[in-house]
Image (cartoon, rainbow, N blue to C red; front, top):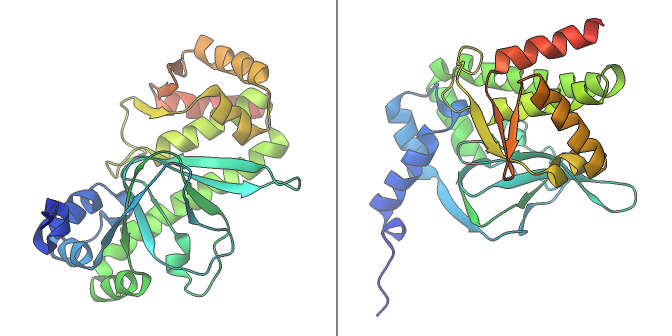
Length: 248
């Protein structure tokens, strides 16, 4: 007779889900009792590297929180190549269609490494928001931040030089990896996994071009890059640099 893993038992699974959900900034406006309800509704979803989690165009409204490993959000070029848009690590959330049930997913989600999602059914999450409306200010704040970041990236493609475009993308990723719920006020360094190949794929650049841009940003003291990891020591300094470069 096989022995169940601790996370397979209902109570332990709920506790595990709760630990993951407490690390998600989108859910930080929910009171503790609501988070416990969400944890009871949620289901863990283990994944293997390169497993397609959601296809572009799929109609599915679960809210997904990365519990372990990493997930890449991507689109497909006209010649069929996967273009990585961003990389989510533990604590990050995706599944914006949870707020627009019936709408197809705009981008695909693929496992970048082995790991796990904790997923809350869309209707269950919407019911929680209806019963705990005090969570709306934080929820809307998180959505507006993500929208601002997306619009900024679109603007950058037309108005910024390549160091500015790469810098903005790194700032966006630093914000996505900050889970303390106070992204604008936090002034500590943020480190996340990212290789030169990832940046080249995201930006449509060569590795040599990426190397030159990273050296420029490193020379300004705005980032540190080593062993497939990027550190943004001061997000406000990077933000000021990007604003000043736009005015030049």
